Image: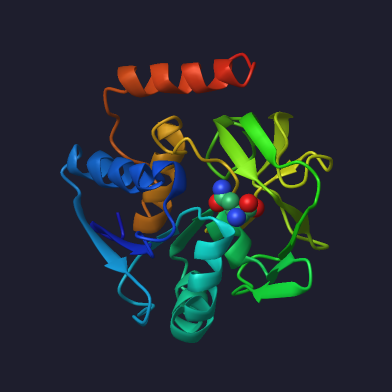
Length: 248
Ligand code: GLN
């Protein structure tokens, strides 16, 4: 492993944490501890600058429009430069739902346009149509993972996200709505920067993906030592079945 410690930066854990998205941090942290890999979790809140060197994994969870508004200006002012530099250095940056939207260029609600940090080439518009809610499963194509490996979770968003030309989705929708309910795309990935609408929280139901993120953050090209994932497998199977999809 090129790096021996997972250094997690959790952005706005007080505001951006719907569906207990902090469970994702607990999974990352515990899967390191169980392997005797050192791990630290540091919250970075409103008004605090983000040092690009401090973390090798940066996480931003989901939030209501109102909470997103509160964090968005701060994200631009105090954290954008650090985020961009961290992404350029190959750090892992993960945004879920509201966090995903803020990693794009903007989130537009009627006349109002909330600027995002532009880490991902996506744009989001709040629709007057129904919220996109329900269980969801997507087939991914991630380096080092079997093609079509499934991520399963739960989505609930009013925003519709559009990938700009050349942007790559995180996966294709097998069941559920995904980015906009019609494109068949879910999420976006640009190297180690990942955005997705999947709550659940995402990682307890998809421990293989937690390991993919940890390995990427640690530059662990040979992967990570195996864990006894009996319980995690069952959570994955249950989440896939809830989305009406046969588990892989
Ligand atoms: N407020 C955003 C929307 O409804 C994001 C919601 C979320 O994070 N679940 O589109």
